Amino acid sequence: MPRKARKKSESGIYHMMMRRINRQSIFEDEEDCVKFIQTIQQYKEKSGYQIYAYCLMGNHVHLLLKIGKEPLEQIMRRICGSYVYWYNSKYQRIGNLFQDRFKSEPVESETYFLILLRYIHQNPVKAGLVRDVEQYKWSSFIEYINKTEVVDVDFALEIFNGDRETAKNSFTQYIRGANDDICLDIEEKHRITDEEARDIIKKVCHVENASDIQKADIAIRNAYLKELKDRYSLSIRQIERLTGINRGIVLKT
Image 1 (cartoon, rainbow, N blue to C red):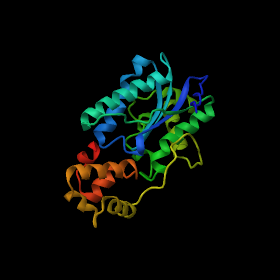
Image 2 (cartoon, rainbow, N blue to C red; image 1 turned 45 degrees about the vertical axis):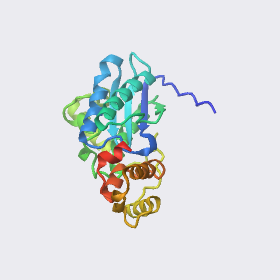
Image 3 (cartoon, helix red, strand yellow; image 1 turned 120 degrees about the vertical axis):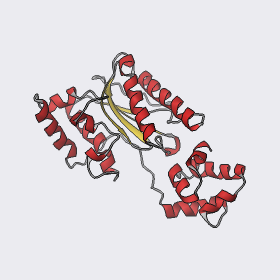
Image 4 (cartoon, rainbow, N blue to C red; image 1 turned 90 degrees about the horizontal axis):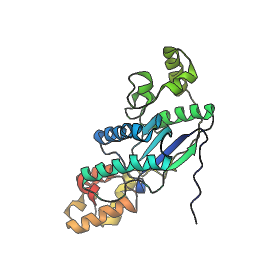
């Protein structure tokens, strides 16, 4: 079936979500997160877009931006292509990192813009990663409160109030507010517990203990690791933790 046409935004503002193939992690350490944020910043002038919010969530990313000189598809090709080139070089891998087609939705009203602003910044809280939006290092929330580096904060803050300090306080209260917001996101599968993962490893690798896979022939071991990632969606960190095999080896399989 042909792909459904992407909805165009009359305002030029879009909420995008992109995730990694097989739902694996996009960011293995803090350097990866820093690099992705730098990449967003790098292409702002060239592509002419404005960033209103971002949140890096392990195996997916949320962006809220307004297009400028270039269409959305070109912007995303630049950002994703640059990051993947760097990531593959760092981890000595080849091939795609992100799914072929990112998800997007147009933002045509001020009300929905604010809902998205809250939804994106509350992602880590609702995922149980932190208790407060301010505690999460890899979202744009802190740029609205302290030093602005990547995000164009004026547009959103002026919606709250003309006075900057009053606007920041109102913004903070709104973002932290309880809500039942439902926006574009990934469809989460059942999260595999360590106990379930151990059973999968023992069954797939034909071992009595998960760590026994270390004793296997390298070619056989690597084939098992690839199957655990691709077929059973075990995370790289989970495989490393349960088998004792170095993360770099798991990444390369």
